[in-house]
Length: 250
Image (tube, rainbow, N blue to C red; front, side):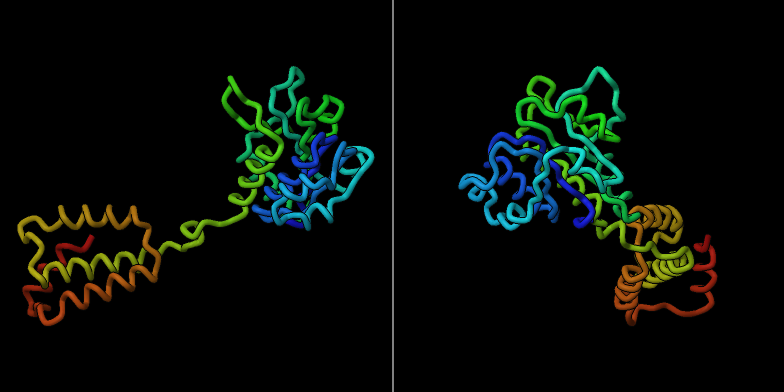
């Protein structure tokens, strides 16, 4: 994604803000910075506030117009601190990130456009955007500085692109889970933990507990190893055991 997302700043007033934006971008693995008619650029403050991200400043591309900065982009999303009378299709930062990730996964280039510090983007500039992203801040004090706004959007992009470990896991198939539950019933019987008058109640509660845990195959193997160790020499045998365990099967 980092090679297909372009952060575009329009007529930025202070070089320090450009440096702070570069830092926010580098924090979140974004690399392409485009500047449209900046009033200041490579100032000492810009380099200082980039705080190690000055390589992004050195690679930043300068454009004379927003149209030129967007010429090769298939999706353009403009950021605005206020809602407009003319209704553009609007996204919140999380929806924006999901859309950007989907577009870049398909190989399309995306521009995220941020306007002037004091006045934002004009309506004419928003006409070039497919969507408007609005950060839902405190309605009584909704103004974020430029770098803060970029950081919020860049963070959501990073989170949308990164697959959490829990989502990457594959839940164990039903057969493996049911085999584990049978083993659990046997182990609890062998160590004398089950109430033989009403064992189903406990096993049903345990079943719900393990369903909530969404065990994967590796976790089931670990638990079955623990059950084997717990049973040890306490494993019961005989016809009575088999008959009793049959009643526990669903």
